Image (cartoon, rainbow over all chains, first blue to last red; front, side):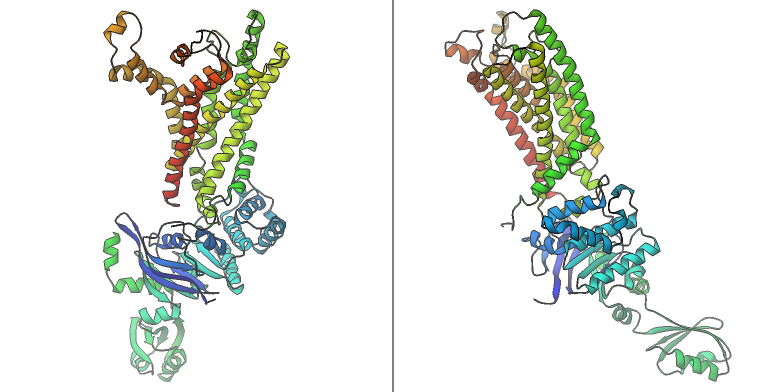
Length: 318
Length: 319
């Protein structure tokens, strides 16, 4: 079996005349965490629903573990776990009863059900609340119960739609940790989010959505190289005379920008902090701060769309 | 294009969960109490009436359901009003409720087809209604045995059984309608109000409206009016229009089953067959005369379900 678990080609979805998803293509490999990132309404959820066979595909193809969700929806749904945006459960039933119902729908043999439900709830830290009514659950607990359902299902692909939205920082971190755990178990995880910064840390690769199209795709450093000019931004705070010239002379530095008196922003080809420090000290300056900026998805995203004002896709979607 | 797998996968799971939900819900308890309360009062008075007046009546037991003299508050009348209420109460939030609780996309991402969800829910609703109606039916018969002190004849049992089945079909029509609305409207309140509104319209206004519209389509002929009988064409139109309402169909079928003497439906037929007017029809003839109504009720139930099914298949899972 190949290493590609999801393969989308020219996937397009139109609602009447509006195009929600416009010819996107991507591959997701086994055991990879892939992020579909972009603002609300960029077509992320529609893409997910098409992969699950829950909405019709206007054109293009998608293969999930070699199956076509249009023709073989049951095969696909058997191997894919889905955590919808703001997942809901039957409030008047307990966590266990909710999972038991889903286990029935999945077709888990009756003899295995109890054990699999218990271990899934254990894994997401809900064993104490197993017999409580879901109506009293917090948002974070519901998300975890949704994850437990996916664990119980024993899937090869997990699709999580906005798993962290509305969660407090601690709950977010717990959830991201569980997502990493899924990856270690060999599950391919596809997650969507509009909070770029939050999920940046877990994603192996990301696709940045914009107006139904994938604007950028790749690992975060790759995108940074592509969009932010392939460089590292090094911030230098130092007092001294003629520092700008000295810093510009450091090998690998392409540009020096004095953002404020005593504040310099270097664009360099690599991490030039040691050399910059040496340059400042060599010039008799006093070095007060030296930092390198990690490429952030937010920066990449905003920079990318600043540089392409009003793309064609945006016009259509408006 | 053939779909892989069976559309019935998961029906059983959905059915049993929904049935359990219905039977343990407070909503069901309230509706059930309502019916029992109304039914008990009405049947009690019917029994008293029978005990006081009847001398010789071969269909004593049937009078318990439908007392002679067209008493307004017969058990049948109560049922014809309350059955739609219970059916709508069970079905109005079937699909949009799942949607609003945000469980729909999660459930549909499990390896089942949408068919299973809708069909399972419908069957569970119908089973719940059947359980209620059968219970009530047995209670009335039990009460009759105690109060009247005579067992029903075989023919009476047959008639009451058919009456029960017709009642279940009638409930099915309203359940289908309520579920259709639950597919069409995203808000449960809108679905409930629309279904109740349609029920009130069909139950209260439509019978009168059908008369007027029938008269407008095919005006009475002066030659018939002169001799004081209604124009057959006009009556045919009026009856046909009135039968759009499931309540009318149910009423006619029930009258045929529970009042063996009533032959309003088959006057002509009876005369052709050389039967004596006013004599009770045998059971098979009663069923025959109510057959179109019974079939119409079942067909209406299936038709409404199919419309809801198609609408549900085409619906987007999210807004």
